[in-house]
Length: 303
Length: 64
Image (cartoon, rainbow over all chains, first blue to last red; front, side, top):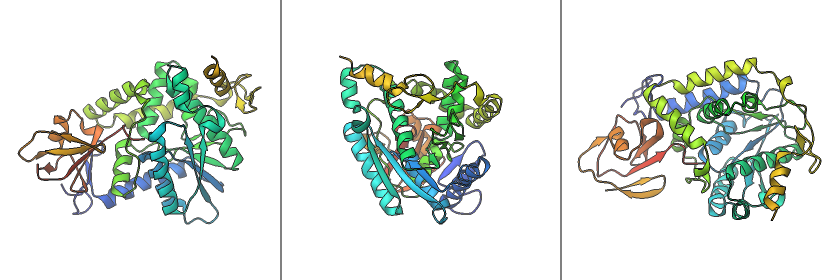
């Protein structure tokens, strides 16, 4: 098939816009979308040090690549990559290699933080507790990233949540009747504007996961292909399948869900979120006396 | 023939050229859930693949 914009061979068909695009026009569209997201939501305005959380997967490495392409030449701004090593055996060691490769290729400073220095490696955790590992992993990872971002004096931390992640989280929050949690997934910011939290930015929030994958493949980004061995526990897998099926039957469903999410977000107010205090155990910000990470950690270490 | 799905080799039976979307269907994958690379280049689901091609399939949601 030929590109709808030029005569080159198309590499992707976008059913929601009924367009065939070649590599050049597709890459340009993806970068334009990420750039527009950053501009419209003032993600980098006035910021000097921006962290990029990378795991070695296609989304985060594509994010680093795009941000470096769009912002790399700006001398007022510094990009710093951060990786959390959860201690999931070969799965993570392979993906860290991919992170190191891209960071050296782009000349981006890279810091690695390990679960074993801040909490308990996932393998140990899973041996002790046969429960949903994603809850532990997510809480610990966010805790470490926030602490590390503050220590590195970052003005914002870019995370690679794509359109699929955004709509899946939106639906999961609705299903669990936790509307305030939608604030946590804002394109720019987080659940609180407290200074203790380094604001998250999500430049890929309006780019479908399939397109992030196509961008990474087309641009020769070497990412880790593999599934987290604990991923099958997640409820997200069911929601992912549902959203993909709906998109296939009714192209544009994901964008419709995203627009509904952004519309609902405007009516949610940050002052409805409980006040932020400091955790009695670790001193990190928390909405209750003891933060979730400390509760989970003491639970995991209990014999 | 042997194709590669998410980095793993998989044997599949097909003898004549077919659309990439039909190949994905054979693999039980929907259009929205995978990308096909033929001889190192990404192709759309409306392009054809033949058993002689070097085919790689990348499923969405299984990497990173």
